[in-house]
Length: 185
Image (cartoon, rainbow, N blue to C red; front, side):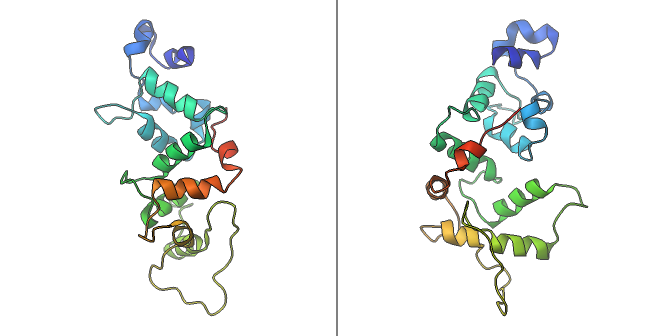
């Protein structure tokens, strides 16, 4: 890990790699992050930069690699996945977080962005991990913004959002989560 981290630094800074910070632009060149739709959120979540530039220290880099390693526990992986999906960093997942998650997965460009109607349909029909999807059904009328299926079914305390423990409960019912929550080269 130290070798990989120091290789991201300019040659003149490599001797002091332990005290250096690698810019986000360099972190994003890693093969594991290059094509990851959450690359910017990953840098944001793991960076401890006081300037909020999402640069990483060696310790930040090590934390990131550890969480995405096969040896990390499902609890650790789900904790960081929750933080990555919590786009507004408010400690809960809500409708806006789900919309941003979908935008990351479908692409940020205008040509790949979903229309409002497509986003509504998708969010309404998404079920928690591994529970299948299905149309709302004939004759079903949707109000302007009913609670999304995934929020409704995952929101144990019925406050309209998913907190970390609710997220971890849903994830615990998905045997594929730990396997899929890694970053591959």
